[in-house]
Length: 155
Image (tube, rainbow, N blue to C red; front, side, top):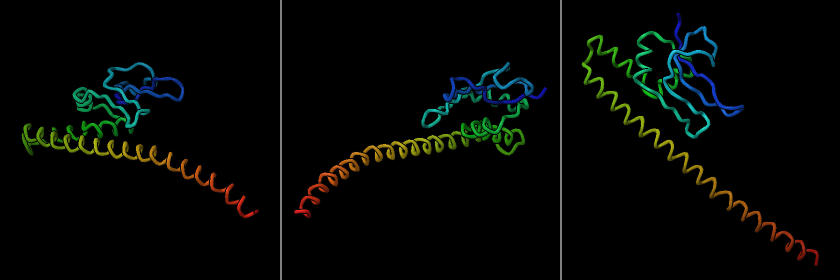
């Protein structure tokens, strides 16, 4: 039996919300599944991802194959990196404590990057909101000046 980690679509029309599930590869997309390991909401900015890392790692170690989108989500959350580090422990390249230190370093750096990107996005949104009133004011001033200039040229 081929086990897949994939998205199960929920939500109404044009308002998707996904469960990240482990299912038999032959089961329909929104059909029977073995275990729910998280959720993914692409409508929020940034997209909201809730994932049980330990369950996902266990299923990856058991041989479950993630779809492309789920693979990106697992990579973003660090599950694939953690699997990579644990394989290094199994091969004897370093011990478990060193692997966890490496993962924690990556995780803190990753969280810092996410907060930096969110701050940049918020600053762009603020700049857009501040720009719109300035444009309206300039257009209003131009509209107010235009009739007076026409009136002076005719007289």
